[in-house]
Image (cartoon, rainbow, N blue to C red; front, side, top):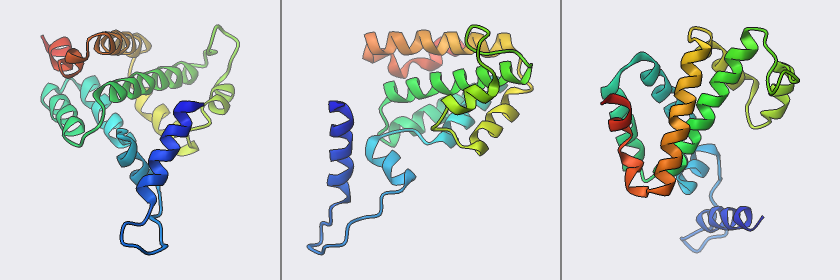
Length: 166
């Protein structure tokens, strides 16, 4: 709860007028992502497409862009793990499999993904349908491993390209 309050205070401080007027800035999703250093969803989609397509150069460009924009590499890595998890779950649901130990359907997953819009769920399903479950699971496991290592050793956060393309 304390972390959430701290994040809210950061957003409120950024939205405060600096010119002496009473007019505060309108905080929308893109401004919120900028304030908190979160990667935009479109970059997650672009990077996952580049990874799945084997485009190493594009992967490196996108990671460099995220870092140059001032985003936290560890946060970006966690967002990417979540994104690959969502792709995997969408793919499993597309196959008609139950999710979460055989007890949850796609409808349950959609409800659990309250932060995801219907459009985002449709996008995930569209991107995942042409990729095997095994490949998505491999990438999810790999990104999770990289994320854990980068948290343990922050200097490894920028060495993703070595992990993937050696």
